[in-house]
Length: 83
Ligand SMILES: [Zn+2]
Ligand SMILES: [Zn+2]
Image 1 (cartoon, rainbow, N blue to C red):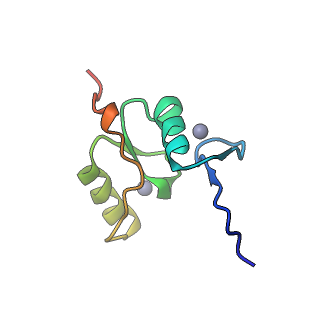
Image 2 (cartoon, rainbow, N blue to C red):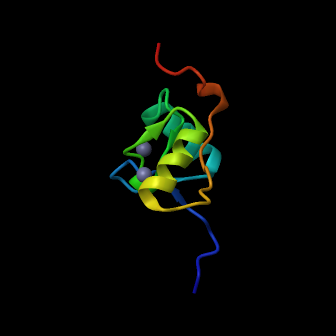
Image 3 (cartoon, rainbow, N blue to C red):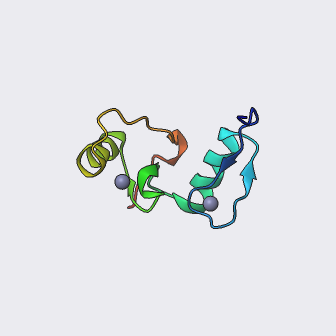
């Protein structure tokens, strides 16, 4: 039986803390993990991050062989990268 209730978990935290929704998870990721690089590769469990969607897609395509990667996390407010 499938669970109708979707619980989101942070892929980078060892603790399986459920988030109330995608927005909450995104906020957590942005604040705690991806300060400036808003595009993590979820296939790498967030170990690799990229400053732009195109960079992420290129990585996923080359490293994971996924041609159509759905960018799940976008932080328009985290546009400041480095410098
Ligand atoms: Zn986390
Ligand atoms: Zn990856």
